[in-house]
Image 1: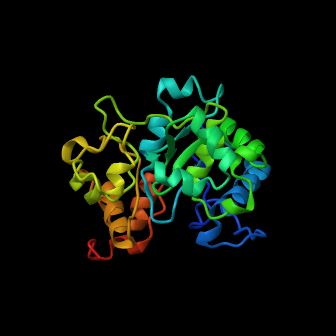
Image 2 (image 1 turned 45 degrees about the vertical axis):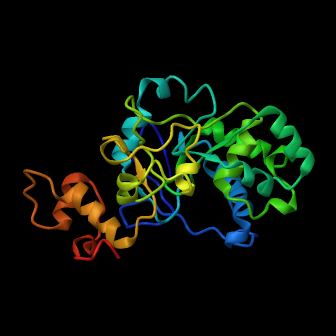
Image 3 (image 1 turned 120 degrees about the vertical axis):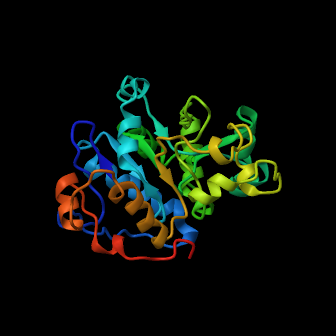
Length: 283
């Protein structure tokens, strides 16, 4: 998904008739979980070649992410972002810190790992689950660095997760994920579903989710876990996705619209009829 600061037009890979549409692009890569990094590199190159000049922001997310676009747009209008996005590469999302045992597992080149450890003691990256957003300068920089040795370009790195890999490439140029928490330390991007975010146990040291938050602010639970202007969640199954859509967009005080079609017309949305079908959100 990519869009501009100067327009409300959202462009996605597929959608309804009201949206701009693009064909699915076939790339000469193996599209499975063992080639995530290769697939993502091909995607970055394609987007850079065909869309780089048309948009200010580029958002990557999994298909089980739920993104509140109004909150995303509002966040990107913050003064510190508006003053910076044309000056330096920026990437924003939910920060993780890779555990040290996985550093050795992911970086199979011993020489590269030795150099990396001489400079850093943590590998901070934005989780790909809820997605992360990058500006045009970030896209420019990452595409230019993809062939480099420090960008995990050898054939042994094909299976690496793209979210960790892209941050590894950029840290050699002192580009790191932004801290997107609010002033109270509550997260805006969430690498779990709402229930998981709310009920997580910060004291469970053996839980990977807690381990991945060491040195990046830790984990908070219940009312302290999520910012009121939260942007995205992960692990959203279809039933819960419809429930969130109903809750955020249909259950509004004062709405006098009789059906989905009228609601879409009033708010310039494109909700489908299936959003009104009852489903067990816990399934």
